[in-house]
Image 1 (tube, rainbow, N blue to C red):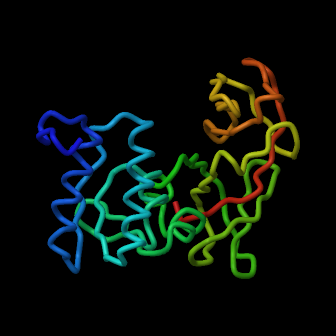
Image 2: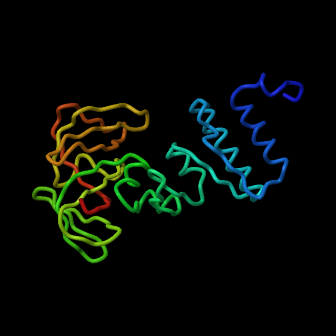
Image 3: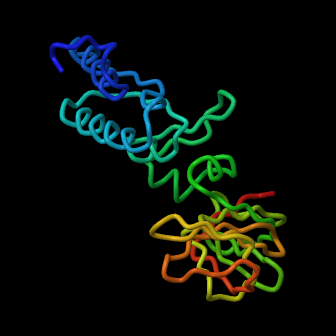
Length: 216
């Protein structure tokens, strides 16, 4: 592509030119502001991998601003989640995803269901009552009283457990189904393997393998 002007290149190629222009100055800090927002999904993944490999190879600190949660998790050593100009949580991608500090972080990073229950302290965590069932949950700080229970869809096990719901709708995503469950405590999102598809209108049991609780 050396003989072509940058404006004649594709979007992904133009982004590579922009990165090269910044890197040639050998900056101590590299700033990215939504650099992949105009690229299609497949190209985003390709350029994202290149940026991460380049950043690690050159050892340059990079500050990367994005609204794409998957992009943030894939690219970062540390993530800072902000809301209305206020810092909500700083941590590794794993810490932010598995131990969100508040309901905003839980809902912003990844897919999350929020259910209302009643909590009682239980060691370092809490026990949350949903109807006749009691769930053990992680809590940033133990508390008692009305609670919001945050569930990740991959932690909802459909077809087993003491909780019950009705399948509202099912979406095929290739390697899995995205299942929306209508429960007495609200809608629950779950991922089900593609070989175990439930049917809309079907009553199913479910359980929660991991959850985070916050004061309501």
